[in-house]
Picture (tube, rainbow, N blue to C red):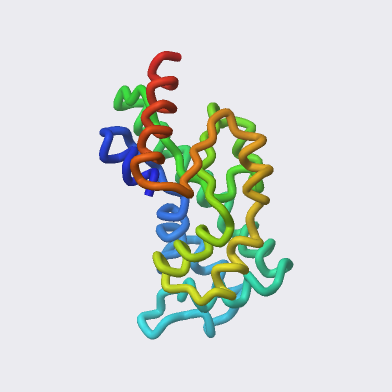
Amino acid sequence: MVSRIIRERGFPVIDLDELAHEIIEPGRTAYDKIISRFGKDILDPDRRIGRRRLGAVVFGDAGARKDLEAITHPEISRLLLEKIEGYRSAGTEMLFLEIPLLFETGMDSWIHPVITVKCPQGVCLRRLSERDGFSASESQARMQAQMDPEEKARRAEFVIDNSGSLDKTLVQLDKVISELIKS
């Protein structure tokens, strides 16, 4: 929700989940590597990688998740750098990145400042289930694959608490954007 609002405020946002979708399309290098590692059972009838099927495998097996990350993270990073360069070349002054695994991948070492959006785990689980149609256990598995939200908040320069009303979230976001514009 916060990145949607940032876009509505006129700022570009690169969403790494969108890049992850892009790099696993048929014909892409990661697609072939994923099929080779995880087999054709993860394919949907249209021969695309079934993210739910793949998720069922990797979110239940830490080794499989590491294998998937070894395939996808370099491709996602390459595509991200291409997109950042495109925005730089176009003269973009402020660019936001939505990176769910920012700290886990070490990208926080070259991205500043870091803004973390947090809410209580129960709220996050409910929102994840509502947004993506995941069961409670699927949502929980995805949340457990990420760093503790409190640790993310400690490591970030800015924290937006998204557990309250939309108006409260907007006030916090506008304050952060104002701070960023000043610096």
